[in-house]
Image: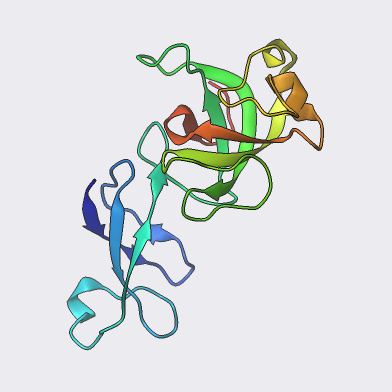
Length: 158
């Protein structure tokens, strides 16, 4: 569990120094909600801690982020499933739809594409609506829980 300083650009996206999996980010916030640069922290007294979760490569996962899911069957090498989705919730920013997250390393994903070859692949966390990826092609089953470490930011299959 590491702590790093992070500054936000005016557009709200983080300038990303090296981010470690499940790190706490110590951020100084200005009254307007934007983070201040470390060298300008003297006059700031409001501080907040922002928790983040990262994908298989250390990229930060956040709401609306597009991801490709990776197979839990091959933890040593990155084996992509032909399944795409969008992060809709993290442990610290959870939505009240879909499965509840029980651990900081889990994310809620709205599945947006499932290749026909992946329909019979079982979900890591089955629900009453979805046991495999084929079941996620319904409105009741399209929000799933998945491990953040088995996600990869992006849309293109390799």
